[in-house]
Amino acid sequence: MRRALAFLVLLASTGIEAAEISATLADGKLGARVDALSYPVTLPKELTSGLTNRLYVQVSVADANTTIAQKVVEIAIRYDLWDERFSVFSTMDGTITESRTLASLPEVSALLAALPLPRLFEVNALPAGADLTLRVEVLLNPIDREKMQMIRKWVAQNNTPEVGGRQGISVSNAIFNRILEQYANGSNVAAAWRASVASAPFRLDSLTHEKR
Amino acid sequence: MTIQKLTMRRLAVAALLSWLAPLAAAQTTQTTVEGPLVVQDVTCAGNLITSCEFIRDHLYLRAGDALDEEQIRNAQLRLSALRNFTSVNVHLEKGVARGAVVVVIEVEEASPIVREWLLGGSSRTDAQRGVFAGRIAHQNLFGKGKIVDLAAVAIVPVAGDALNEAYDVALRYVDPQLFDSSRYFGVAGVRWRKRRYEDIYGNFGSIDTGQFEVTVGRRIADFSYLSLGIAYRPDNDWVAGRWGSDGDFTISGPESFSHQSLTLAYGWNTEDDLYFPTQGSTFQINVGGDYQPNEPEGRSHLQFRKTWAASGAYWTFKVGGDPSPEYRSSLGESQAVSLSYARPVAPGDIIQRARWYIEPGFAVKGYTSSGTVFYEYGLKVGFRADTTAFGFVDLYLLATKDGGR
Image (cartoon, rainbow over all chains, first blue to last red; front, side):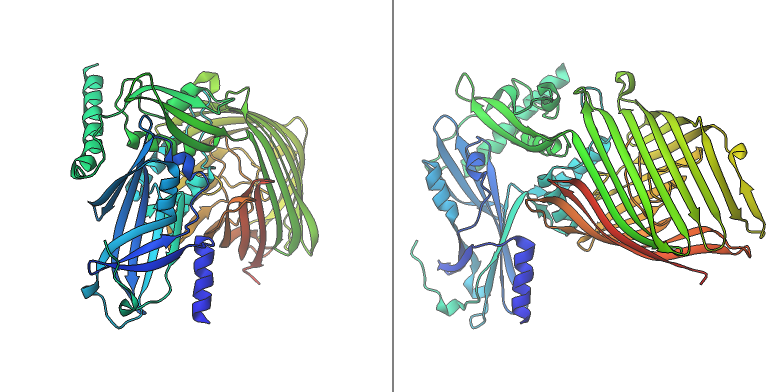
């Protein structure tokens, strides 16, 4: 009953996600794959904007009692306007782990639809016989707290209108507000779009090793 | 000029390094190393009433600069914070040569019409009443950011041993940039107010008057302002009787209430939003004047509001109700001193943003016939939303208890 209630609270707080997480095992490391995330409908347009789009992915592994380990993976995608192809870089904790070039938007969409997050946690450091869960939080183009503070200061200072149509500030933009609300809820990073997904409980000995 | 060149050079180097760093680290892959992009031009799309110059001013990049994506994201956030736009997107287009890009800022303009509705029920000092208020404003008159604002408030008695009834209509024209100055603002208005009240101790009052008013203000430093207002009432029908602390009952009438009044106000405003503040404070102190009836209960001469976020909620401490800083005006009913606990509500198709709140408070109302202080304490619960269909909506219930009984 308590689990069902917790699940309902989770759904209410993150929006209903049809996404699923599968645990993966490769090179003695636990990883994850996130399938069917409901990205914002504007994502294809953003991906071909010529600007770098960043997915900030926070992955944590937990047993029944506590979070055992946590990793941050960042996936940067940039479209080259002339070559009309996408460069995709994955970094984990600040180190580049993978880079690839994709020829078309469908290829990028396919990659994001089954988002690979391989080799995150050393299996040896995880309890072998315990029920584990993976929780993944994905943010698109995150804004860190420091930058948000800078923007908020700018907003407050620009409460004073200037000549030429600046009408004074009222943060009426829904996207901006969503970001502010996330900071108010204690997040260290926030984004206009974010999604949280948790896996079903699994055991390490139930996973099969993937080939590279 | 030298500084500008240095800044440009620094930007170019920073952009080059930031772009090359990950590529250098990934040189074993098939990714080709490219040079930095250079801004050929900055253009706008989707702006019908807003000038492109105004939009471009928020992006600190010019033609010839190295493309700095950080600056573009910052500009997008700054523009998103303006009430002028409902959405802001930026994309690049190919320029005349490889490596040269046109930065396109695409906006969706918001309607300049603002609507605000308030529907409340309150039981205060032995009087139960319904409170109805509405405001409709055009915030970009002549395409120059001038404001015209029509607001009406009605307090309708429903039941109770005491009486509190009020009707107020106000029409205001606001120039936030008086004489094209970013420092001065001006407000001209006309209002009519009718109010009757009588509490169970015998304090009473009635007013029925029209009023013309003009206010000129000056902004000081980043957040403060000073304003001077004059009000003129050609026909002044007003009488009030109140118990004093010495047990004497004083009746005052129009002869003690002049046809003109001057109000000097000083205040500051560091809040990021008037309706849904997430941080900052407002303060205003008025000297002179008599009443400022934007609120159902009439406005206090001292007003302070501070908001902060903690434990997933917004906390707001208020003295003197909701603020109307500078030329802005807000509708609301609060107790004199209150602490509000508000939680955000998830936005959807109809609700763009919303909060529900609980607000315990306290107010001194006057004196009883025996000269003792007459005060109330109570609780307000409400829901405030910014909706796509109706604009701002505030629904609340407020109940107070006479502290002396």
